[in-house]
Image (cartoon, rainbow, N blue to C red; front, side, top):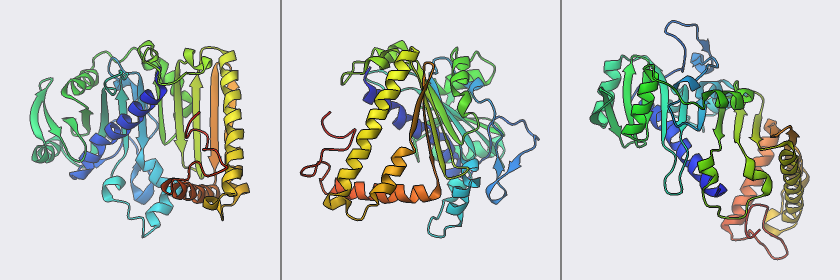
Length: 358
């Protein structure tokens, strides 16, 4: 399996399609609020009194062929301490379109060697009737029909095909075929057979502001590898992650492998990479590009990466305070300066782990 191909396709397509429906709606004046709450249900309030979604089961809408999902609760992010600080910063200028977003969920299928994964998604909206939403979309999209419903092919700000289901629901897809799949499930059709497995794999991240998981299928494993893969990766079954901003930044990840021995080996390999990273930072701090960098503070950030094996799972956790984030920003700026100056492999210093020749 080509890990870089899979990672690139999933990450790029997920991020684009995840926001395609939501940003398009907000861009044209439709307020996005929450996913999965019944009309009239109590809604918690967050930043500037905006509603914050309860953590609900979004996976019941996953269409057949789904191998993963990505969900973002924008209102919870804005209600977090870092989100509040961002809103209060006059230089940040958070766009109203972002402030209006709520929960969005993206479902994606397996990529192939030639094509990115097919994607579709769901956004709950409020403040407009279905007719008003459709009117807005008709002004900027090309009208068509999908599953007997009016749908709109959008090009700006993202390419997507959208359909207004009712006063509170808009569905989107990367193509008319993908939109048709989620319409069918939303209207009572059979969801993906992978729903229970995704629920189990993503359970540890259910309350996080950004969360997702991907199941590694046999088709994905069959993709031609770009480089030699470690033996422990061959039996990989899937991965999940969660991001929280409730107190600083908390990142959690889990990789499910084929056995406990594989997980132990993967965790051991990760510890080796962490040690290599700390050695590289020490060398970087002594180079011209690293002058002024607090090397010990940077190394302390790397020490916050915790990797452990639990049965067949490899767990990764990183907890950063606001001070840690400041140090991370300083280190990142130094790295950017070095890359722009073509100094990734300065004389006497090897490239950082993950860059350059293995």
